[in-house]
Figure 1 (tube, rainbow, N blue to C red):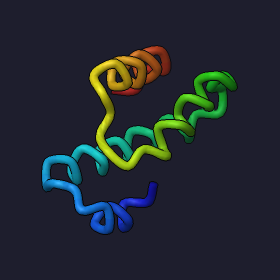
Figure 2: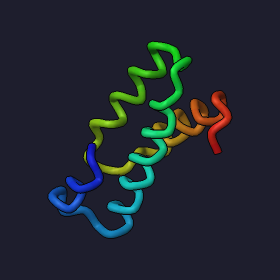
Figure 3: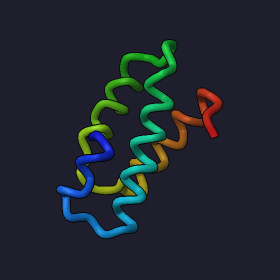
Figure 4: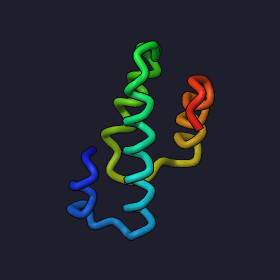
Length: 71
């Protein structure tokens, strides 16, 4: 989701910030060419979210970031 579309979702300020952070994190990971097809599919699914990640989804994203050295 594009950051400019967050406002149309009627999110709380904290959720809006979380979605912006998610967008930035996904953009960083999507720039890595060597990401496996399954991981890329997970990232694509996360891009379609209209609300912040669940705790389990956050752990999955953090694991992918850790695997590719993203802090």
